[in-house]
Image (cartoon, rainbow, N blue to C red):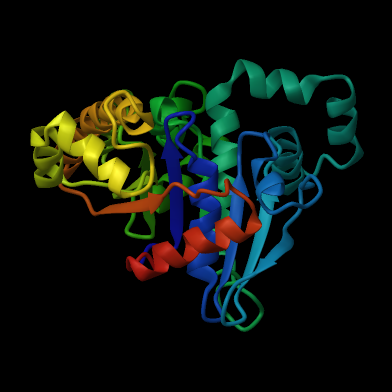
Length: 325
């Protein structure tokens, strides 16, 4: 499995949750995973119910089997300072540049450089080895920007081509692209079984493929439980109203006389069944669209109790059971 796992998705699909669950799943059985955040939202800290992450790698969870999950919130300004120190040995001059706002100015006017810094830090973690020559992390999972800009974010070499054709920035971009366009990387997209997220997923995969970036899997998040299948819905639609009322009465949900409680329950039940049938048809249609994309598909359930730390571990188990490891 690829060592750099990039997770993207339309806003509201739960991509940060899926990235965190994936990091836990990959860390199972004694592995070590680094979960990287690049948007400055501190979503990882909220999910793991911990304090805001600094610009340093910090252990935030232990996975089943003794594995470990570390997290890093990458700050573009601090990454640029680190980069300047590495190549130009600026020392206190670099800190002075930050104080007067030059660092923020540089990353704002040159977003391509900003993306090189963000992706470069993640790629450095992928390649990093300890003194024994072993990789420090078995996997790096990146909670990446949304689907609408994921290709541009990852295709940093093209972004900086007009800014720096030679020199350290150019060399850094080239090194990053060697990782991002290699089998070491897989880009996963998170979606819901709704028309807009599925369309954006389809467009995103087409853009990634056009840029020769490695497409991984599609994860369908927050899938509602199936109450009836297609045959069950057809059967339910054919049952007469009187039979439904009698069945409700037999179940103790109203009197048998006409106009009783059972009779009053029929219309709300039929309306609910119609609403479910419409949603079932929509989800079936969207599943067909996703199946046509020719990528592995996985589904994660909507958690009845909402998302908390226990729920995160549950989703990690779901991913493991579906072979995402």
